[in-house]
Length: 461
Ligand code: SF4
Image 1 (cartoon, rainbow, N blue to C red):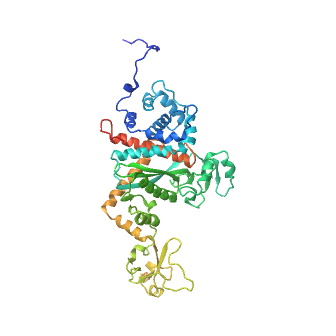
Image 2 (cartoon, rainbow, N blue to C red):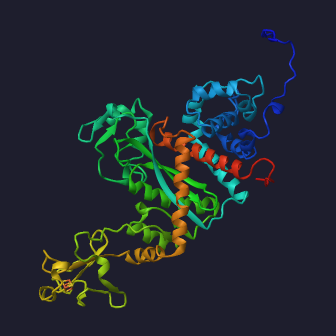
Image 3 (spheres, helix red, strand yellow):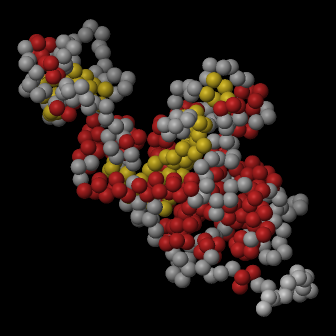
């Protein structure tokens, strides 16, 4: 028998409990157990006036932003609609059934004002790291570092070629992203990272880097840098930078130092790909920070034309010389010049020469130096650190580190596919910084919720 047609009727009274309506196994409940914003209120208090109309509750805005980044809701306008309609989101935001959802423009005003002045989103991210440490998810023995490109909100149509003159001061009067670009020109992670001018500069977001690093069409991008603990892939630090290698390596150093300063964490080993394997970076890790580099050495000395590579020459530490396959010695410059010349060039390289007399008489010359009078070998002043990294690369521990390093890449894949952060919505270095901090905080919260599901004993934060 067909049931009667239902007619929507407004009831006079409802008996409805939001608390009972949200299932115990819902993700918002799992995440909510680890969201503690009591410190955030104290952190923000100095940035609010003691008089005047009460503002929108900052905790409500942070909770809404967390919903947006945890569940991949990228637009703030849509976030407001979702929180308005979704009961579980209302419960998470402590809104009740009748609570008003703030207007989407409130986020923009607060972001450019109090949130940035107080570095609130950094504080929020660090709160999640402290919670992970308190729950025992951070071992602190091994870290991995990597960077990933995220498309900027800029396109080629609104860009200028490097040689084209642009009046940035004029543009800065109306565009916040241009003001931020000019302010960060001397910073190591931004303008000062490289003197090479990119092919195009965006007029709407000039700090974004024009890059063809992904081998397809070039685009404007920022880099998000993650430093993770290898035990459970908890993100212990995050940094926004220009999408070039020098800036990414600089960010890795910044994050290692900051993690020690903020959380007292100092890894015994660092896993990374060959982008971090330059001689200077390996020397910094080994000699200045005492960290084992589980990193492939960035090495261009290997030859593919059939002639001897540098690895065919044996280095004698005690006598500071190389021995060639023909049994002859290669030493640093023997000549004495009237005006003294340095033995190390501006790139930190030393030169070891074979004698022309020996090479002329050598039967191996066609395989060694067919077009030069004598063979020459370059050696970095940081070769000791490079040798250490090469030795580590032969160990079983390195095989483990190389496998564990993939955890950072998985976090980036999760960031782009599940949290949908494959293109930035905000412009300028500060916009990128805000988005990366929120996304990393969301990833740590999801990690806590996944590893410590409802029913497990949660330690007091
Ligand atoms: S050519 Fe010179 S450097 Fe090369 S193997 Fe012969 S002697 Fe040694």
